[in-house]
Structure formats: structure tokens, C-alpha cells
Length: 419
Image (tube, rainbow, N blue to C red):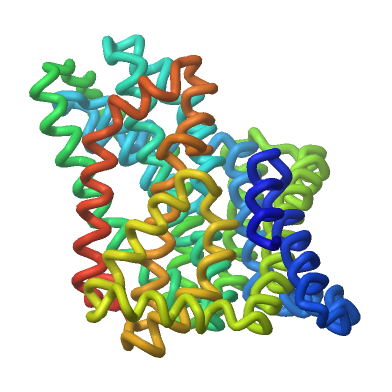
């Protein structure tokens, strides 16, 4: 009955947070153990009683302040200084700018929407096809939840009861590796499709772009430096990053006004509440699963199929890729971690941080995979193009990302290098 209600509500289009609460409620009623209802609200509240979760609204606030401060355009011009004159230069600029924005924003969907609006028209003017421009931008947005700061990693750390700092550090090398593979893919496609070289900037223009953009890099430097140096928690680092973004917008770029802060804080509160409600609903859902011994049942089945840690990781990757195509990253993460993590660590001895990196990237890839692929639809909608056309063109990036996932699954040292 619980499974039927879950998928029925999912097909109808009910928000995933409400689905999780409803499924938990139905499970309690069907089990006859109605005394659990007395603790239903308390479990939801206790799921949010974690200091690390404060980083989520602060990271979202940084993104809002960055938009208001005009930081994105300056980072794009900074990327042009280094890769603008290469063959397919604008595609490289798109990707490098995405990487720099990812180190500030931490949200794939927000990054895809923002960068598609900025980069696709510019690439079209230079002779790039719209589907290719949109595909590069969409997969560049995939870096958002991987390169610190990352809301997805914060949520995983809370669910797995790990230090948020460790998860954010573990994402650095995978993010750099994925960026390198994307650059190689663009290089091959650029020569194959004979894309034009970008405009070479004069030295005065280069110095001007550097002067205008380098202060913007203070934001990720403060965030990552605070975490790496052990000067503060990710939450405190996010607070410092938000302060830097506000000060740069008000006093350096002068495009952010004090009067803009009210609407920015309101949007931050609304977006944060959506994510945190998901965490709360996941808490009560996981609590019910434990009472129903679901993790133990799933573990028993998996042990009959996967006899080694490598087989287990590959099996999980296939399952999560399919799940990620129909459910958004964070809700899917919230659903699977309470079930799969105890199996990974207890039965197969897999490091929980290594497991978290693979699981998170696996589910994020689902953002750009049919049939749901929220990120894919956002990019296609902003660019006014068919989602199928975008996915067809982005297949090389999809294959490269899945290849990177296999490497990360088989080589845990990549994820654990900075720990």
C-alpha cells in the first residue's frame, strides 16, 4: 500500500516532500503501530536540529547576492582572458565561467538557468548551434553541486552524520577532474565541428577584465580558505562569503543597493524553506523505514546480487542513474541514503565520504537525463529549444560524466585526497 501511494502521488505530480510525509503516514497506519504518530512532528523537527543545515540558506543567499552584484558577467570576462582565443573559445569560456560560478553558487538548477540566459545568445552570435550551446551550459551547471560549496553535499553530510567540511573537501578533486574531461570533450568537438576561434583580447582589455573580476574571486577564496584552513565551519564560511558578496556588490560593482537586500532575503527564505522541508520530511520517512526494517530487507537482497564492493558500487550506480531520471537530486538523495549507506559501510566496508561523492554525482547526472531531467528542461526552456535536441547533442558529455563516475567509484583515493 505504501509503495502504491508513493508512486501514485509521484505520477500525479505532488511535491516530493509531501509524498515522503504521506508515505510515512500510510506506512504507520498499515503497520497498525499508530503510537508512532505521536512522535511524527517531533521527528520532523529533530531532523532539522543540525548546525550544518544553516549552510544551506547561506549558500543560497550567496547566489542571490551574486546575481544582484553582477558578478557573473565579470567572471565570464575573466574566463575570456585565459581561453577566449582558442578554437571553440566561447565554449571554453562557458565551461570555465561555470566552474568559477560553481565555486560560489553551489546549486545546479540555479546555475543552469542563469548561465543559459547569459551564454547561449552570445554563443549563437558567434556561429555556434543553439543545441550545442545549451548542452555545454547545462553540463557546465553540473559542476555547481560538485565544486564546493555544495548544497547536495551538505544534505548528504547531515543525512550520513558526517562533518560537512569533509564532504565539501572531498568534492574538490572530482570537480576538477570532471572539468578537465569536459574541456577535452569540447576540444574534440570543436575541431570536429570546426568551431570558430574566439576573439583575442588586447592587453589593456585583459588587464581591465582582471581588475574587474579578481575581487570577485575573494568569495570562493574566503569560503574554501576558511574551511581548508580550519578557521571556521562551512556554515561560518558561508556567512563570510555572503558578507563578501554583499560588500562587493554595494561598494565595488555598485550594482547592488541596500534596498535590494529585502527582496533578496525573502527569495532566500522561500528557496531555503523548500530544501529544508525536504530534509524534515526525509527524516520522518527514514525513521519509519527503520521501524519497518526496510534497510535490512534491501541489504539481504543486494548481498545475493553483489558479492564484492566493486559490484555493489556498480549496481548502485545503475539504480541511482535510473532513479535520478525521474526524481530530482536532493529528494532522491534523501530517499536512498538511509537505505544504502548502512549497507555500503556495514556490509562492504566502503568509506561513507567516498560513497557520498559517487551517489551525489550519480543523482546530479539525473538532472540532465530524460524523462524528467529538471536541469535539462530548465536549460531547454530558457534557450527555447527542444529538450530532446539538447540531450542528443549533450550525449558526449553524458558519456564522459558516467566514465568519470566509474573512475570515482573504483578509485576512492580521488575523493579522499584532501582528508
